[in-house]
Length: 276
Image (cartoon, rainbow, N blue to C red; front, side, top):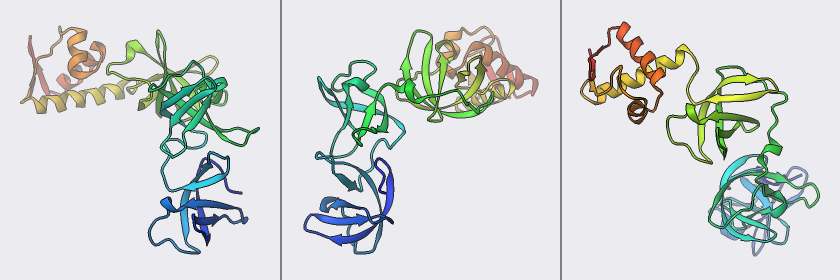
């Protein structure tokens, strides 16, 4: 059976005036319209296509690349909004609908939102939703402290940002631990800081513990090499000065330069750091 919302390798079975019909191993057909037929395609060729519903709810194949696929998350922009739903640009000819009942908050034209794509079991249509928490479950979390993870930022609140972890878990990055600007929809690498009671997951954008200091020590060395061996930071630099220049906290900075100093790689002067 041809699956909606994913890429499938199908076989060209027959041609028509409007395009080629593609077939799967079970004999189900789907049309690839002429405007998406690549040059040289012929009968019995295999081709990778994305399958979705057209405006009349028929299966249609395309060689276009969507911005989101089934059971995944992506940041999409609203093309048009109506009382019954919002139409999102997902890179295909027909826009993706986020019905009003699937909106966590009212959606507005030209705004972007993190959307999850699912197959509605009643209508058998691909549908978007911004009710992200419904599709994140930390119950059987297999992550451990310091694990490197893939993140997508999806919600901003007072204390921090909620993130999607590895496309299936929910995590939190605290704002007082963020030293570079981030925004909704950003895809980042991060590390598991701790897993608290109830499988609540705290995330850090930097590795935890001694390894993190090594990473930041290298960052300072790299900056020194780019600035002829001198940077205007020191033990008494303000947290704001350090964050602006290096994107790290003062605590992390002091540990990092401490390592470099003990390895005799730098000299710490009253008003600057020198590369030895």
